[in-house]
Structure formats: C-alpha cells, structure tokens
Length: 389
Image (cartoon, rainbow, N blue to C red; front, side, top):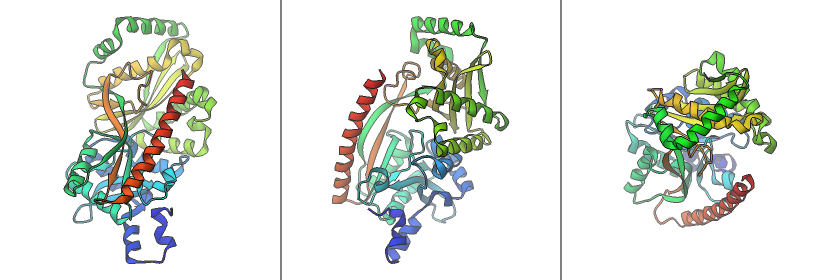
C-alpha cells in the first residue's frame, strides 16, 4: 500500500488528493507554540506527546522518524484543539489497507492531546481529519482505555453511530502521589520486605554514603543524562543491543529531548550513588500533574543490593513529597516484576481500533489482520518472558 501521506505525490492531482494532503501534515509543520499551549490545556496528560519529546523522536529515533499529524483546529481555524501523531498502517504493520496508526513516541503511551476546553469538538475534528486523509480506521496503540482522551473519542464516535473496538489490553502500575510516601511503601511492601531492603541499603553504604540526586536544571541535566546512558548500556540492554546510546539516532533523540524538556521543567533525571559511584539512574517526564517513569539503568555489579528498587523507593518518596504531582505512570509492561510490588495503583492500557464509517467492510479486514498480529506478538512476549526468568 502506498503511504497515505504520500498519495498526492504519486497519483494525479485531484481535489480529493489536495484535501487529503491538508488533512495529514508532517509533524514538524505543527507550530510548536500552538502545540505547547494545547499540551497545557490537554484533557489527559501524556509526557511522550509533548512537542520537545515527540519532535525529537520523529527527527532521528530508530524506526520512528517522519511521523505525520492529524491536527484539529477550532471553528476559527486559529487555535489548535487536538493533535494525534500518526503513521500509515502499512508502515506500522505492513498491512496494505488505508488506515492510520498512532506514532510510537518511544514511551508506551499514545493517548492524543485533546483540548479540555472543547473535548468533543476536538475529538470530532480529529476523526474528520482522518476521514479526509482517506483512512478507513484509526488504530490507537497503548492508550489509557478509561482515560479522558479515549472517553472524548468514544463520545464523538457515538454521535456517528460508531463504537471503538479494543484489540488487546493489559493492566499497568501507577503511583498515587497524593499519599504519604513512607505509609504507601510500608503498605505496598510489608514489614518483612521493607526490612530486607533496608538491610541491602546498609550493605550498599559500605561502599560509600548513599545519595539520591535529582537533576532538573538545564545546566546539570546533561551530565546526569550521560550517567544514565552509560548505566543503561552497561546492563542487559547493552548486551541485547537495545540501549539508547548504542544507536546513533536514538542517542541523538534523547540528547535533544531531555535538555529541551528541562528548559520547561518537564524532565528530571534521578540518580542513586554510593560514594561517587552511580549505581542506578532513571529518566522521569512531567506533564501537568502527572509524572512518567521512562527508563531505568543500573550498575549490575551492585545487583545484590537491588539498586533499581532502591532508586524507585527514593523516587516514590520524591514524587509523593512534590505537591505538583498527583500521580505517576510507570509506563511499564504488564506484571512488571520490579515496579508492580511498589506502585500498587492500576489502570488499563490497550490497543483500540476506531472505525471511521458505518458498516465499512474494510474495518473488518483491518480487525482480522491486527488480531492475527496480536496472537503472534503475545506468543513472542511469553517466550521472551520465559527466557528472562
């Protein structure tokens, strides 16, 4: 299938082609100031669709470049009220059917940005833009199924007599940061586990004083990022070849995105040290009142002291002590063995097929093809899970 975004360049020019070209535009053409303003008003936070992050991903990240955008404007066409980064279904899955898929922003959350001042209008206009681009369906991967963005899209679909179809789902860990951190940790872990982790921390202190550092200012975050990148590459991700620093495009993306977000206080890097040695580090995005735990790197020489868990305990206290943060998304996989026992909040994440026309037989073909892919992916996930045990 020819990528929807490039049809007008290949087929003879028609009014329909021109409309499609206007409906689907390069992500890089969106006015960053309008995008930032929409993010501030968004009905549901998504740190991975902040402009500084997603533009960096689309510019260089391996396998994620050159995303397009469905952009919704209000009646005056002057105010951006909805934004959904997308790619074609052909590019995403090699399925030759005209449909659009949410662009993967490296983090596992693709809930679109929808204006809280006009959520139904924004959702309706996003769907209209997708139809105008020639798509028969939208496929939203990794969206919060009960989130405000999905709710707005469902209401807009209901007006047209349409319903979204959940292709797959899982439950993900989250943190209620409005609670007292120490109380939350005691309840989550229990006295025995807390005692064991305290013992491990004392053992870690034998190598030097244990310090928890938070880098958030632009002048300090660069060196903290390099520490994180080295830690990530030193562990199993490095052995598997998936560490960010091992691929030029990924390294360029993260080195562009993190400092840019630090300029607007939307990113911080947390590091745990014993003496002068960094034993664990993580990247945390911030959007509105929500934090997003992006990635964690550890020094596996200290693995017997559980440095990743020790860092997460400190991060939990840090977020619970911050009045600006109400919740945190682990952005982790289902049944994650490290984060799930600590962050006991849960919410549903899923892949959703959104039909754009009633009684469209093409949607059934898309559903069947994607269901087959999900079966294969789930089987592969189970194999990988067994190998990691």
